[in-house]
Image (tube, rainbow, N blue to C red; front, side, top):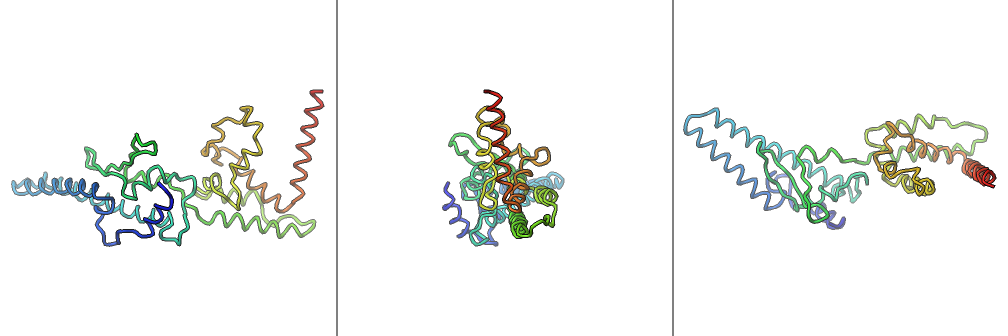
Length: 276
């Protein structure tokens, strides 16, 4: 499903705030919901007529539970529309970390299905991108993998710009602790996920990392598992921290790039001499 199609849908949302929570996910799902609720209400009336208020109450509770779940799902759809771009002037706020195409986009563009399990809880499903399998989620599952971009990139770029400005002051150290500042940004909720997968200051971390480590990747020294996005979690890995702190240090001291190249050249020459 194209990004253009999704944006057009959310920019021209066919439902308003007064729309029922049961009618904003397509006619097929609406029919399933209406049939389920109608059946529960019918049972409620039957047991009330028989004077069994306890059993009737269980059916009433089931209707209220479904209504609450659908209301929550409606709010999630509104949030998704905003984050995707419909409510923010066309700016997409989802990080590349979030795979919106697998479930979210098709479901919220009314190409999904709603059913109910044995506990009468909504089960949401879409056809997987392979066209064969199904991706299934509960209402409470939808947002758990969302990563929304905040001010972290702007905060980082300000630090980098400050470093560039201060590089003109000869003999003076940076007026902030680079390692501490970068740690603070990466540890801000899910910010590290954006820094691992999004373009920050015009550059992708993973793209640079792969280019700088081509030999180690080809030799197997850096395994496929070490290139998986979750492997860069700063809770147990320092590669993100080193990359972004080095960018600031190089902005402050452009000669650092030359110094690093000289070090690498010396290492290479040493290896060649040892082989000779």
